[in-house]
Amino acid sequence: MDKFDLIVIGSGAGMHIVSSSIGEGMRLALVERGPLGGTCLNNGCIPSKILIYPADVIRAIQASKSIGVDASITGIDFPRIMKRMRSVVESGRKKLERSIESEKKSLCTEVVQSSPITIH
Image (tube, rainbow, N blue to C red; front, side, top):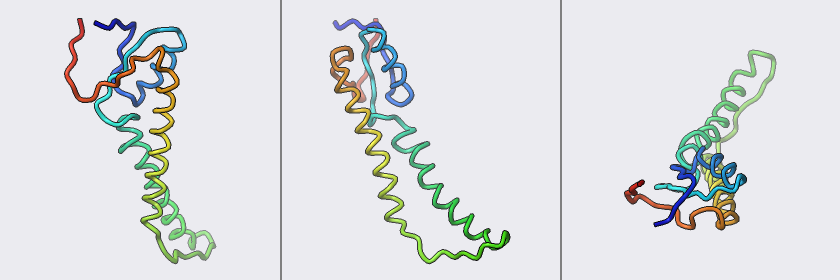
């Protein structure tokens, strides 16, 4: 049975713990049942903020007349907005994958996907 100094559950905010623990020479395992980056990167905080920003810009343009700026919206390219969001998420995930790949000596080489584990 493998022995670890630390088991980190989740690759969202848990990746901060992974990085600092590896820096201290600990042997650790990362357990993640979903895509790397957790909820925040993949379908929570980051994607929602990327989608909210264009809406905020639209609202600012709509309100601009009240402060003396005559502006108008001539179109909204929603597929481009979605492509940008997916690109940022994918880039973040790939960065995490490269980070894990570079630290394989200290990190358990298997990321456990959706399987029950027993801690002794």
